[in-house]
Length: 295
Image (cartoon, rainbow, N blue to C red):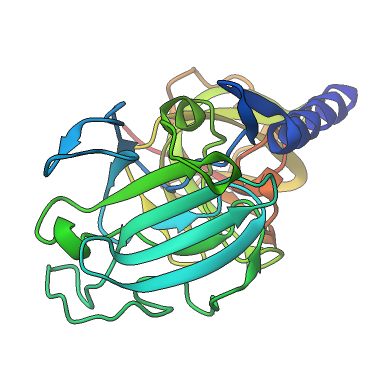
């Protein structure tokens, strides 16, 4: 298990570095490495400065499915803003680094349609239970992506701004490109299990590792994601069970001989939500069952 322990230590060191290592910001106060602000498939471009109604765009628009989770990019304090006709439901995150972030066009719909029947309140625009003025941790759910304000009827997206020292906005693009992308998000220390679907890269029952290419995720929190493409290294526990989808059992040692590209469904053990598990750090997630899927 020496290899597993080394990988886990290395992974946690990388996670710690991601939270504290600053990035230069053109002579301004450094903006730290961020947690990417949206969970799940997204698209975005470097549209900072583009014209928007005669004014330059002050952020990057992150296109995502309606009601995708928006999360804290660093530790800090949140302030709700609920009375802007243009921004709609909005949230400020005052980061521990001194950087201020704006989350704009959060959800105001009660259904998955553009009904505009919701208010800028926790459970609709903001994460359930989140309070104005709350202290939050990096990766903690803050709200839901929407199309409120002058984005009404447009594809749901998060307009995200970065303000070093709380001053003028700078382009978020390179911070987003280097951000830590989460697999899922939950209240810190909440007990969570995942069901992961994808293809096998390799298994090593002696080292206690399983590598897979992830393409779908379902969380016990209710989160469901598709169209993912990400490599994960999970721990194979001695208690992990392995079966074919038609019911036949197989030993963990037999996993070692399966061809790369074999379709698998992996269930993880119930474990507390931490930054390591949420970001899918190597060996942070432990398998409870591996199902080999038929072609």
